[in-house]
Image 1 (cartoon, rainbow, N blue to C red):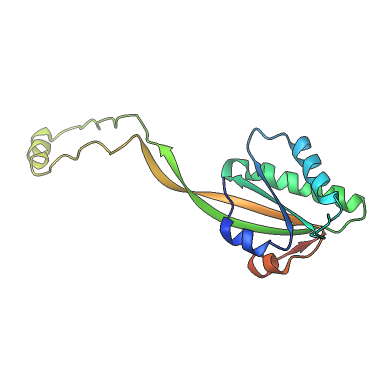
Image 2 (image 1 turned 135 degrees about the vertical axis):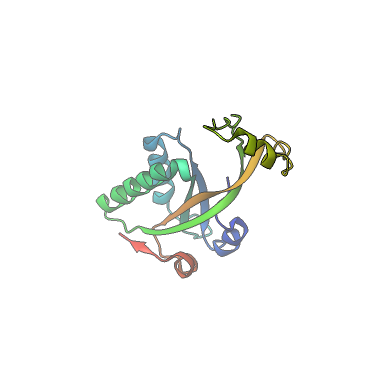
Length: 161
């Protein structure tokens, strides 16, 4: 799963240590929050780059993503650290299974002769091609950092805590 404009993020965040994590419906909240806190609490390394954590989730796990981000922000505030948050919404193309149920014919009350005549004028379509259909699915990415990031602020706005 990639976040919004993945290649743009790599260029934009080259001045930072960028940690990418995904959130799935099966992700444990406690383990993910502790992992994020450990990344954000790390001191900048030899290169002096501050850490930016990006959390990405599809629509089904978006509420869990928001819960994780809020818990991390609350933990950082309890320790007296500032937290900067940037929210990005995007979409990705996904294959969705087609409905396998055949349509039930409607029962007609009367006028069967008229229906037969009008049906002859139309050509029947073949079955839909392929077992799946393509749909654009929403994806949310939340960036968390202890330092302000002007590149993300320009694109997504900023929330401070």
